[in-house]
Length: 310
Ligand code: GLU
Image 1 (cartoon, helix red, strand yellow):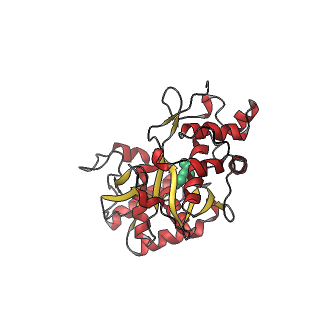
Image 2: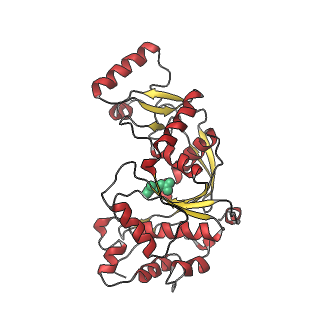
Image 3: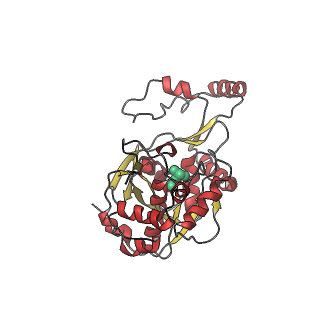
Protein backbone atom coordinates (compact mmCIF):
# COMPACT_ATOMS: atom_id res chain seq x y z
CA UNK A 1 0.00 0.00 0.00
CA UNK A 2 1.19 3.53 -0.66
CA UNK A 3 -0.46 6.79 0.32
CA UNK A 4 -0.27 8.68 -2.99
CA UNK A 5 -1.25 12.01 -1.47
CA UNK A 6 2.05 12.08 0.35
CA UNK A 7 3.84 12.27 -2.99
CA UNK A 8 2.07 15.44 -4.15
CA UNK A 9 4.41 18.34 -4.98
CA UNK A 10 4.87 20.78 -2.12
CA UNK A 11 7.31 23.54 -3.06
CA UNK A 12 6.71 25.33 0.24
CA UNK A 13 7.72 22.28 2.27
CA UNK A 14 10.99 20.63 3.16
CA UNK A 15 12.44 17.22 3.83
CA UNK A 16 15.54 16.44 5.81
CA UNK A 17 18.11 13.91 6.89
CA UNK A 18 19.09 14.06 10.55
CA UNK A 19 21.97 11.74 11.44
CA UNK A 20 23.37 11.31 14.94
CA UNK A 21 27.16 11.76 14.74
CA UNK A 22 28.06 8.61 16.60
CA UNK A 23 30.25 7.17 13.85
CA UNK A 24 30.46 6.73 10.09
CA UNK A 25 27.20 6.15 8.21
CA UNK A 26 26.74 2.57 7.06
CA UNK A 27 25.05 1.36 3.89
CA UNK A 28 21.62 1.35 5.55
CA UNK A 29 22.06 4.94 6.74
CA UNK A 30 23.24 5.98 3.27
CA UNK A 31 20.21 4.30 1.71
CA UNK A 32 17.87 6.16 4.07
CA UNK A 33 19.66 9.44 3.31
CA UNK A 34 19.31 8.88 -0.44
CA UNK A 35 15.61 8.11 -0.08
CA UNK A 36 15.08 11.21 2.08
CA UNK A 37 16.77 13.29 -0.61
CA UNK A 38 14.89 11.60 -3.47
CA UNK A 39 11.50 12.00 -1.80
CA UNK A 40 12.17 15.67 -1.01
CA UNK A 41 13.38 16.47 -4.52
CA UNK A 42 10.59 14.43 -6.15
CA UNK A 43 7.98 16.42 -4.30
CA UNK A 44 9.66 19.76 -5.10
CA UNK A 45 10.64 20.27 -1.48
CA UNK A 46 13.78 21.81 -0.05
CA UNK A 47 16.14 19.35 1.61
CA UNK A 48 17.92 20.12 4.87
CA UNK A 49 20.60 18.44 6.92
CA UNK A 50 20.56 18.46 10.68
CA UNK A 51 23.29 16.99 12.85
CA UNK A 52 21.64 15.54 15.96
CA UNK A 53 24.55 16.11 18.29
CA UNK A 54 22.81 16.30 21.65
CA UNK A 55 24.57 13.16 22.81
CA UNK A 56 26.40 10.08 21.50
CA UNK A 57 28.81 12.39 19.67
CA UNK A 58 32.07 11.03 18.34
CA UNK A 59 34.73 13.61 17.57
CA UNK A 60 34.86 14.40 13.84
CA UNK A 61 32.01 12.03 12.96
CA UNK A 62 29.61 14.74 11.82
CA UNK A 63 32.13 16.21 9.39
CA UNK A 64 32.82 12.75 7.97
CA UNK A 65 29.09 12.06 7.60
CA UNK A 66 28.59 15.31 5.67
CA UNK A 67 31.52 14.46 3.39
CA UNK A 68 30.11 11.00 2.75
CA UNK A 69 26.65 12.33 1.94
CA UNK A 70 28.15 14.78 -0.54
CA UNK A 71 30.30 11.99 -2.01
CA UNK A 72 27.23 9.90 -2.86
CA UNK A 73 25.75 12.87 -4.69
CA UNK A 74 23.39 14.44 -2.17
CA UNK A 75 23.07 18.21 -1.91
CA UNK A 76 21.18 20.25 0.64
CA UNK A 77 19.70 23.69 0.97
CA UNK A 78 21.02 26.27 3.40
CA UNK A 79 23.39 25.76 6.27
CA UNK A 80 23.60 22.51 8.18
CA UNK A 81 21.71 22.77 11.50
CA UNK A 82 23.52 21.61 14.64
CA UNK A 83 20.98 20.47 17.19
CA UNK A 84 23.28 21.35 20.09
CA UNK A 85 23.01 25.01 19.08
CA UNK A 86 19.23 25.03 19.38
CA UNK A 87 18.94 24.83 23.16
CA UNK A 88 17.07 28.14 23.47
CA UNK A 89 14.35 26.97 21.08
CA UNK A 90 14.06 23.62 22.88
CA UNK A 91 13.75 25.34 26.27
CA UNK A 92 11.19 27.75 24.86
CA UNK A 93 9.02 24.83 23.73
CA UNK A 94 9.26 23.21 27.17
CA UNK A 95 8.33 26.55 28.71
CA UNK A 96 5.27 26.83 26.44
CA UNK A 97 4.07 23.40 27.52
CA UNK A 98 4.86 24.20 31.14
CA UNK A 99 2.77 27.34 31.09
CA UNK A 100 -0.12 25.24 29.82
CA UNK A 101 0.25 22.85 32.76
CA UNK A 102 1.39 20.02 30.49
CA UNK A 103 4.71 19.30 32.15
CA UNK A 104 5.59 17.71 35.47
CA UNK A 105 8.78 16.87 37.30
CA UNK A 106 9.73 13.22 37.62
CA UNK A 107 12.03 12.01 40.38
CA UNK A 108 12.10 8.35 39.41
CA UNK A 109 15.37 6.58 38.74
CA UNK A 110 15.57 4.24 35.77
CA UNK A 111 15.49 1.30 38.13
CA UNK A 112 12.36 2.54 39.92
CA UNK A 113 10.58 2.86 36.58
CA UNK A 114 11.57 -0.66 35.58
CA UNK A 115 10.46 -2.09 38.89
CA UNK A 116 7.17 -0.19 39.19
CA UNK A 117 4.00 -2.12 38.35
CA UNK A 118 2.79 -0.86 34.97
CA UNK A 119 -0.57 0.84 34.63
CA UNK A 120 -3.43 -1.29 33.22
CA UNK A 121 -3.56 -1.26 29.39
CA UNK A 122 -0.27 0.65 29.23
CA UNK A 123 2.01 -0.25 26.31
CA UNK A 124 5.21 -2.07 27.30
CA UNK A 125 7.85 0.30 28.59
CA UNK A 126 5.40 3.15 29.18
CA UNK A 127 6.03 5.32 32.21
CA UNK A 128 3.74 4.11 35.01
CA UNK A 129 2.82 7.67 36.06
CA UNK A 130 4.44 7.54 39.51
CA UNK A 131 5.17 11.28 39.70
CA UNK A 132 2.11 12.51 37.82
CA UNK A 133 -0.02 13.37 40.84
CA UNK A 134 2.15 14.19 43.83
CA UNK A 135 1.44 16.34 46.86
CA UNK A 136 3.69 19.34 47.52
CA UNK A 137 5.40 17.41 50.31
CA UNK A 138 6.10 14.47 47.99
CA UNK A 139 7.57 16.86 45.43
CA UNK A 140 9.84 18.41 48.03
CA UNK A 141 11.02 14.93 49.02
CA UNK A 142 11.57 14.14 45.32
CA UNK A 143 13.67 17.28 44.84
CA UNK A 144 15.74 16.46 47.92
CA UNK A 145 16.35 12.96 46.53
CA UNK A 146 17.50 14.51 43.21
CA UNK A 147 19.91 16.83 45.01
CA UNK A 148 21.40 13.81 46.71
CA UNK A 149 21.77 12.03 43.38
CA UNK A 150 23.20 15.24 41.88
CA UNK A 151 20.60 15.17 39.14
CA UNK A 152 17.82 17.42 38.00
CA UNK A 153 14.30 16.08 38.03
CA UNK A 154 13.39 14.90 34.55
CA UNK A 155 10.52 16.80 32.93
CA UNK A 156 7.65 14.76 31.52
CA UNK A 157 4.67 15.54 29.37
CA UNK A 158 1.36 15.24 31.19
CA UNK A 159 -0.16 13.37 28.26
CA UNK A 160 -3.85 14.01 27.73
CA UNK A 161 -4.34 11.33 25.06
CA UNK A 162 -3.41 7.66 24.98
CA UNK A 163 -2.79 7.36 21.29
CA UNK A 164 -2.28 9.46 18.19
CA UNK A 165 -2.53 8.78 14.46
CA UNK A 166 0.07 9.55 11.81
CA UNK A 167 0.17 8.84 8.09
CA UNK A 168 3.14 7.06 6.67
CA UNK A 169 3.81 6.77 2.94
CA UNK A 170 4.19 3.01 3.17
CA UNK A 171 2.63 2.01 6.48
CA UNK A 172 -0.54 4.06 5.92
CA UNK A 173 -2.42 5.12 9.03
CA UNK A 174 -0.47 4.26 12.14
CA UNK A 175 -2.04 4.62 15.56
CA UNK A 176 0.55 4.63 18.28
CA UNK A 177 0.76 5.04 22.02
CA UNK A 178 1.42 8.41 23.62
CA UNK A 179 2.61 8.26 27.21
CA UNK A 180 4.09 10.75 29.66
CA UNK A 181 7.26 10.95 27.64
CA UNK A 182 10.40 12.66 28.86
CA UNK A 183 10.93 16.20 27.56
CA UNK A 184 14.15 16.94 29.41
CA UNK A 185 16.29 14.24 30.99
CA UNK A 186 17.69 14.13 34.50
CA UNK A 187 21.13 15.03 33.13
CA UNK A 188 19.67 18.25 31.75
CA UNK A 189 19.77 17.13 28.09
CA UNK A 190 16.61 17.82 26.14
CA UNK A 191 14.92 14.64 24.95
CA UNK A 192 15.25 13.55 21.33
CA UNK A 193 11.46 13.41 20.91
CA UNK A 194 11.13 17.08 21.76
CA UNK A 195 14.23 18.33 19.92
CA UNK A 196 13.28 16.60 16.68
CA UNK A 197 9.80 18.13 16.69
CA UNK A 198 10.97 21.66 17.51
CA UNK A 199 13.82 21.56 14.99
CA UNK A 200 11.74 20.11 12.17
CA UNK A 201 9.07 22.76 12.66
CA UNK A 202 11.61 25.60 12.82
CA UNK A 203 13.13 24.46 9.52
CA UNK A 204 9.73 24.15 7.81
CA UNK A 205 10.17 20.37 7.54
CA UNK A 206 6.87 18.73 6.66
CA UNK A 207 8.27 15.45 5.29
CA UNK A 208 10.13 13.13 7.65
CA UNK A 209 11.99 10.26 6.01
CA UNK A 210 14.03 8.03 8.33
CA UNK A 211 14.58 4.44 9.38
CA UNK A 212 11.54 2.50 10.49
CA UNK A 213 12.83 1.77 13.99
CA UNK A 214 11.45 5.26 14.64
CA UNK A 215 7.97 4.56 13.27
CA UNK A 216 6.68 3.81 16.77
CA UNK A 217 7.97 7.21 17.97
CA UNK A 218 6.15 9.11 15.21
CA UNK A 219 2.75 9.27 16.97
CA UNK A 220 4.34 10.73 20.13
CA UNK A 221 6.25 13.26 18.11
CA UNK A 222 3.24 14.21 16.00
CA UNK A 223 1.22 14.67 19.17
CA UNK A 224 3.91 16.97 20.59
CA UNK A 225 3.85 18.91 17.32
CA UNK A 226 0.10 19.28 17.73
CA UNK A 227 0.46 20.52 21.32
CA UNK A 228 3.03 23.08 20.21
CA UNK A 229 0.79 24.31 17.41
CA UNK A 230 2.90 22.92 14.56
CA UNK A 231 1.59 21.22 11.47
CA UNK A 232 1.93 17.45 11.59
CA UNK A 233 4.54 16.25 9.09
CA UNK A 234 4.12 13.49 6.52
CA UNK A 235 6.17 10.43 7.36
CA UNK A 236 7.99 7.85 5.26
CA UNK A 237 9.80 5.22 7.33
CA UNK A 238 12.39 3.22 5.43
CA UNK A 239 13.17 -0.43 6.28
CA UNK A 240 16.31 -1.05 8.29
CA UNK A 241 19.40 -2.68 6.88
CA UNK A 242 20.32 -6.00 8.50
CA UNK A 243 23.18 -8.47 8.18
CA UNK A 244 22.75 -12.00 6.83
CA UNK A 245 21.81 -13.18 10.33
CA UNK A 246 18.97 -10.69 10.42
CA UNK A 247 20.60 -8.44 13.04
CA UNK A 248 20.69 -4.70 12.54
CA UNK A 249 23.67 -3.77 10.34
CA UNK A 250 26.64 -2.56 12.37
CA UNK A 251 30.30 -1.72 12.05
CA UNK A 252 31.30 -5.21 13.22
CA UNK A 253 29.66 -6.68 10.10
CA UNK A 254 32.70 -5.72 8.06
CA UNK A 255 33.15 -3.17 5.30
CA UNK A 256 29.79 -1.44 5.74
CA UNK A 257 30.68 2.24 5.42
CA UNK A 258 31.40 4.25 2.29
CA UNK A 259 35.04 4.65 3.35
CA UNK A 260 35.34 0.89 3.93
CA UNK A 261 34.00 0.27 0.43
CA UNK A 262 36.38 2.84 -1.09
CA UNK A 263 39.28 1.15 0.72
CA UNK A 264 38.28 -2.07 -1.02
CA UNK A 265 38.60 -0.35 -4.38
CA UNK A 266 34.94 0.42 -5.00
CA UNK A 267 33.79 3.88 -6.05
CA UNK A 268 30.99 6.01 -4.58
CA UNK A 269 29.01 5.16 -7.73
CA UNK A 270 29.42 1.44 -7.00
CA UNK A 271 27.96 2.04 -3.55
CA UNK A 272 25.04 3.97 -5.00
CA UNK A 273 24.52 1.14 -7.47
CA UNK A 274 24.39 -1.40 -4.64
CA UNK A 275 21.82 0.74 -2.86
CA UNK A 276 19.83 1.14 -6.08
CA UNK A 277 19.79 -2.64 -6.60
CA UNK A 278 18.37 -3.05 -3.10
CA UNK A 279 15.60 -0.69 -4.14
CA UNK A 280 14.76 -2.64 -7.26
CA UNK A 281 16.47 -0.27 -9.69
CA UNK A 282 19.73 -1.90 -10.74
CA UNK A 283 22.13 0.04 -12.92
CA UNK A 284 21.64 3.43 -11.25
CA UNK A 285 25.12 4.86 -10.72
CA UNK A 286 24.21 8.20 -9.18
CA UNK A 287 21.71 9.61 -6.71
CA UNK A 288 20.29 11.60 -9.62
CA UNK A 289 19.64 8.37 -11.59
CA UNK A 290 17.70 7.12 -8.58
CA UNK A 291 15.79 10.37 -8.39
CA UNK A 292 14.63 9.74 -11.95
CA UNK A 293 14.09 6.00 -11.87
CA UNK A 294 13.09 4.79 -8.42
CA UNK A 295 9.40 4.26 -7.80
CA UNK A 296 8.31 4.71 -4.17
CA UNK A 297 5.44 2.28 -4.73
CA UNK A 298 7.96 -0.50 -5.41
CA UNK A 299 9.64 -0.29 -2.01
CA UNK A 300 9.87 -3.68 -0.34
CA UNK A 301 9.00 -3.15 3.30
CA UNK A 302 11.09 -6.04 4.60
CA UNK A 303 14.51 -5.15 6.00
CA UNK A 304 17.32 -4.86 3.46
CA UNK A 305 19.60 -7.86 3.94
CA UNK A 306 23.10 -6.60 3.20
CA UNK A 307 25.18 -9.48 1.89
CA UNK A 308 28.71 -8.18 1.54
CA UNK A 309 29.86 -11.39 -0.09
CA UNK A 310 27.90 -10.40 -3.17
N1 GLU B 1 19.10 11.12 14.67
C1 GLU B 1 18.28 9.97 14.49
C2 GLU B 1 19.13 8.81 14.02
O1 GLU B 1 20.23 9.02 13.51
C3 GLU B 1 17.18 10.17 13.46
C4 GLU B 1 16.14 11.09 13.94
C5 GLU B 1 15.07 11.39 12.91
O2 GLU B 1 15.30 11.26 11.71
O3 GLU B 1 14.01 11.83 13.34
O4 GLU B 1 18.73 7.69 14.20
